[in-house]
Image (cartoon, rainbow, N blue to C red; front, top):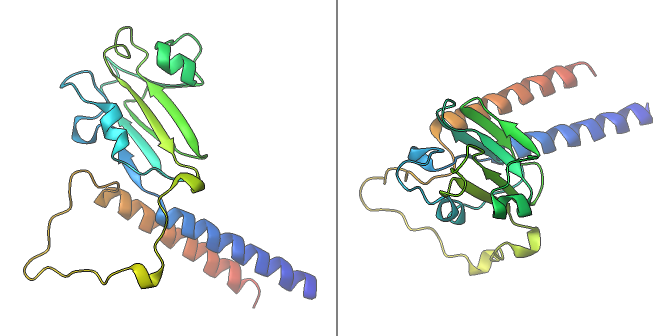
Amino acid sequence: MANSAMGCSQRVVALVFLMAMAAHAAVYKVGDSAGWTTIGNVDYKQWSATKTFQVGDVIIFEYNAQFHNVMQVTHPMYKACNATAPLATYTTGNDSITITRKGHHFFFCGVPGHCQAGQKVDINVLRTSETAPIPSPSEVSPPSVPAVGVPAPSSNSGISLKASMGSFSKLGLAMAAFAVFVSGFN
């Protein structure tokens, strides 16, 4: 009985960890409202510099698949806009890529001339030692509350309503699976 109780507790810990990971992932649309394009002089370097990416985040590339694609490449390929041997190629026009590790993730459009025109992005997931220090509770001042109204969310927010609903759906599914899992031990 002790072994089954230990196995159960390990499964519960793993399930709670997975639920926590799903609840904290952000969804980023590359280029925000402009999407993945060569039109409009989108500065993807600036776009990525304003984001704090983490493992588990989802990066969405939205584009016209007749004119663009997404290639994941190495750093030397990224610097040279070399599309001859990409690590991965995406062509749907609505590609979702989940970040699974820390470090740099290099992407560009493989259509001739597009990378050279600036259609490339470096998604950098900072290592723990590179992130900003978290202040202790004594250093944190209480949040200020606006006297009137609530500001609208900015267009640069990392997660959209659609994305947050997706996270809530995943969380609900995980909770239902957990309930079924636990009821099997009664």
